[in-house]
Length: 316
Image (cartoon, rainbow, N blue to C red; front, side, top):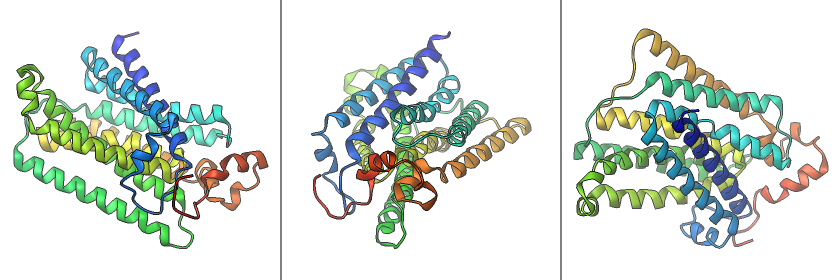
C-alpha cells in the first residue's frame, strides 16, 4: 500500500483518538457559558492531555503523508476519522451504535471524501494579499462569534438540547480549523527561507493566536454534549472551509467540469443526508433524555448520567 495512504490512515486514527480522549476529559466539566479558563482546568486531566498528544501525532502523520502524496489523495482519507470515532463509541458500549448510525457516518465520510477527490484543488499562488487575509479573518471571526451566540443562547431556551449546542460549536470549530489550515499553508511557504523569515512572518503569530482560540472552542464543543454531535463538524466543515479559503485566498482551482460539478453536488447531498440521519440517532438524542431513547437498558442510561445538563457552575 502507498506510504501516503498508510500515513493518512494513521493520521485519521490519531485524530479520532484525540477527539475521544478529549471528550472523556471534558464530558464532566461544568460551564454556564463561555469559559476562558476551560483549557486551564482541562490541562489537569490525563485523558485530555492524552488527547492533545494524539492530536499532535495526527498532525505529524498528516504532514508526512503530504510529503509522499497529493492533497487530493490524502485529504479524502482523513475523512475516515468519523468512522474511527464511531468505532470507539461502539467499543465503549455506553450506548449501542446501530446499523443506521454506521450508515450515516459512512455516508458523511464517503461524501466528503468523494467531494474532495473530485474538487481536487490545485494551482494558485504561494501568498495571499493582505486585504484578502483581512477579509477572510473578519468573516471567519464573525461566523464563529455568531455560532457562539447561537450555541450559548440555546442554554436559556426551554427544551434546548446539549446535542444541538455541541453540533453548533463543533461546526464553529471546524470553520476555525479550516482557517488555521490556510494560515499553515501561508507559513509553510516560508520554511525554505530560514528561521529568520519564519520568526518574522506574521502568519506564525496569527497561527499561535488562532490555534489557542480554536483549542478553546474545541474544548467547549466537546464539553457541551455528545461526541457524535460535535465530531461531524470537526470532520466535515474543516476541509470544506479550507477548500473555500484555498480558492479565495490562494487562487486555487477546483474542478468545475459538468461531470465533476455534478459529482461534487451529489457528494454534498450525501453528506447532508448522512448528517440528517445522524441527528436523529440515540447516540445524540439519548443524552438529552429523548423519549424514543429511554427504553435502552438502565446501565446505558446510568453510564450517560454525568452528561446531563449541569445544574451549577464549578469544577466537578
